[in-house]
Amino acid sequence: MTYRWGMEPEHDIANIGAELVGASLGTERSPGEVLNELFPYVHEASRRMSTRGIRDWLKENHGILISQPTLSRAIRSPGKYWQAFAEYIEPWARRVEEAVPCTMQDFLFDARLFRHFVEELPPANSFPEESDERVKYGEVEEAADFLEQKWFSLSEESRLQCRRHFRQMDEAEGEA
Image 1 (cartoon, rainbow, N blue to C red):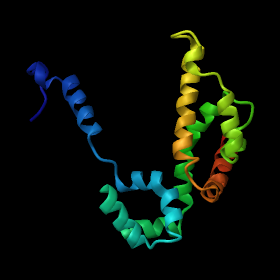
Image 2 (cartoon, rainbow, N blue to C red; image 1 turned 90 degrees about the vertical axis):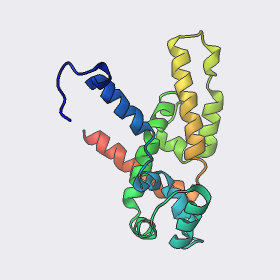
Image 3 (cartoon, helix red, strand yellow; image 1 turned 120 degrees about the vertical axis):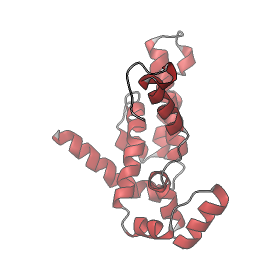
Image 4 (cartoon, one colour; image 1 turned 90 degrees about the horizontal axis):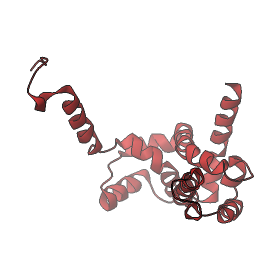
């Protein structure tokens, strides 16, 4: 079917585009996207489980399909996965960094320091509704919650494995 201007309203390009976007929201993420996010946990588990065991556990318990060869390659060559995970965490950490008196490098690798500064922040709802401060601190609270769930749930050893990838991003930013 070719598109001709003046078609029925249900075939309007904007409607087709909106329908396409709606359909894409229901599309499952690729195994590579899931692995990027799960990699630190896969890396930790690989010290006690085979990649076949990890694959089977993910499939049986969560319906996540990542092939055993893909898991093996990720564990043998982890650099790009640590980099992807650092890039996933970094925007959230930057949001917190803007509100606390230390650098992202400091609080990401010291959970007590992170929790101390986050506890010291005023709650977003202590500011007038629709104020810039309320919005800012709401975003900081959201970022802090995200980091608690996605970053500080990792072992200290895994967080340290990822450290050099944050440094590389800082260095690349400094060169730009």
